[in-house]
Length: 332
Image 1 (spheres, helix red, strand yellow):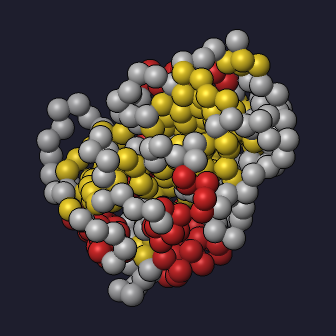
Image 2 (cartoon, helix red, strand yellow):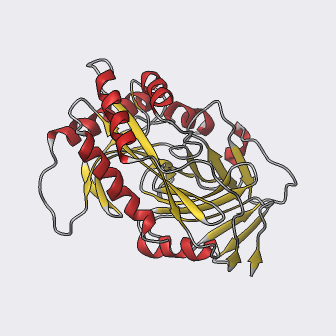
């Protein structure tokens, strides 16, 4: 049994469709800030939403497959639940700022819920069981705190062929088994904005680009529209990550206008929510940090959000965040 304290730096993850859990433990006595060379050695990358904040690297000095481990977070959190009335006001304010030149912004809210101070390995194993097709992750460092989630969205991941893949993921509705109804125009347009933006970046930055067809994917209690881009692996991964992150799926379009709007309207710091994380080195599997929560001593801070366009209805946007929260509430 591996025992971890709040002074340790470690990451645990399970890739989509795989059985094994991998654990990386750093032997460093202090934080390792991320740089370009880290993408070429085994370890785990942790990047925040805001580029001006620090990114970290957890070196894989010790590596384990399917280990037994134990960890109890001890940090406290001052961020509290955003009430519905405040969330609706924020969405209305966001809609008023949109225009043909500024068609989309992603707005989010925090949800603080009780989480019994149990060995967090229990929560992690539940996520693996409930969401076999997601990237399930858990990391802790003294600098970032403790984060866990089940992300459906790869920023850059390695395929079995050795090529890399990025996806455009947008449009959300509740998942209902055997639901074959067509998507509404609002969700289709929202996803196409993301496709056009990511495609434009990749066309000028990669070789061998191939674009798949839009299709529906199931992610926990919701489903989305997804388009897949594949391309040849390259050496300048750090540069490509910074070109892609943050994507319109977590920020909006145009990115700088959306970024400023998020900063002015959201009454809290996203921190590592809508950042990206994942293992690098022999293989790269970076995922957008979605469907995630920050684990605290006796509580969990869940982060949920959605894409706002001129066609958005605030009450329905609230409902969407409620659906997304179920992914994590189900394991607590």
